[in-house]
Image (tube, rainbow, N blue to C red; front, side):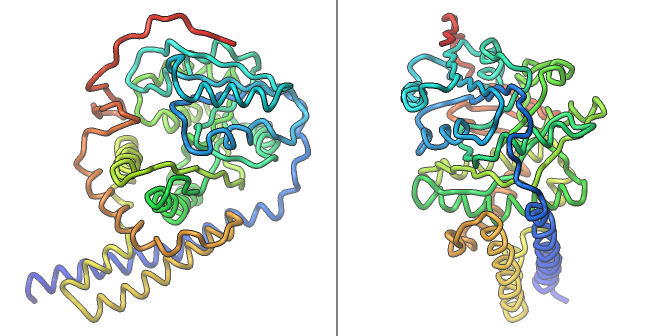
Length: 394
């Protein structure tokens, strides 16, 4: 057997494993969200006071709509929203001002820095926001998330369960900024979501996610507060680990949020997904390495180079399996199959990102050049000039 033929068989075997994985992921995806139909619709889940923490950076597409969804909730208790930016001239401040006008009765605070020193600018921003918080249940979520009206009620019902220390949420993608954001949304919905469900279903991964972290103040203080994660790349994952170290669990209710996806160029898309993949490699290197077998279509394409006919058959099977997963993900998300035509492009991109993430030690995070220094920690290669202005809370 020649080296070329042997290589083809290796790629073909990996493609077969990948196809099998896709079918298992399909079953896990359907089973996980089947619980939604059995779950009674939450109607208030008590009247506990909640503070929403929303770190902001720049004027993202549809930011006002995304933020408004967190205020328009079917929830009976008091809700405070704390928005935070790194400096007073951040364009997101205008969005918060408009949000206040549109919701005059809402309890809204805004902080404008200075952020806590550290390579993780988001955590630095959140730590500065804590001075404005008034309630003991904290719900942290990224600025690019969209939620439904039962979001808070569902979170609080899950957080109230015995032994639960934090609650997080799965999400799909929604392209808000053209074709590159649509490709990003396809990758999130059709690769990221099934992989997250597989990790949860097999107990291989039990992380918190930036989409949502609901946590009680006493639990946050017990794990060292947000300051503990100021130089941590995967702050959400590390918070989940710290909660688990207390003997508490991280709950994931069968509720699907939406990631806005605002990548306006290939470069933005590439750096965004590379950061995610490098983050997983930094915190779970063995699981990240093993996830290579999930790339069924990419391996089928590679097999075709050496074994044209068997490879072509594997491409058809891989595409069929991936389309089944994509269709199921869209059905669960309650949307028409908007991005399925982009699935092959998204799959090839994700494979390229995966290969690159195996060797990269540098990432771009909203303009900051970060270096991965080991044990999931990061250092800013070009640290900003310290901001010594006084924080504004309004």
